[in-house]
Length: 227
Image (cartoon, rainbow, N blue to C red; front, side, top):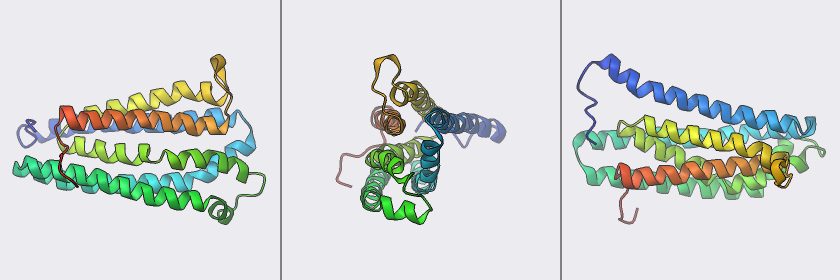
């Protein structure tokens, strides 16, 4: 909370806050490109199955993005008021809201995999692959939504570098794990499309742990009170 965001030239402040976020977005794009590259090596059916999952993945990603924007708005204003207790409560409540949303959407998603993707046009030859991918992905959705909200809280405190580092580490982990779990390199089991989902979940889990550690020990943004 010691960053003086209201002092000094506006231009330099914007550059310092924006450049790490731009780099983080490039890391997210690399995350998806690597997934697509390795899944494409499995065959057209697997690649088509993964493309069918994009509307669901993007919808839930945008849900997390929206929750993060709302969280950063109220948290930043509380920081501006100098009320650390409210800052901690807002951060903790935002993460709790994200967890609640994750539970509801993951439960609904697991129950509606076949009818949803049939409605999107997936045929019987593609559905088994979609099922393989989404059953793992839905269980790991907490690792997508909660870190995005947590990183938004960190940005609200004026720290845009740390969230970018977290996203870069997650992307790097995914790049390393994709060939190992999808193709079975270096003695790992060949899991194909399930491997792509598992690599994504593991990479996102690392970002969740990192975001929570930063929130708790570096920025001191978490409250011990019941949300």
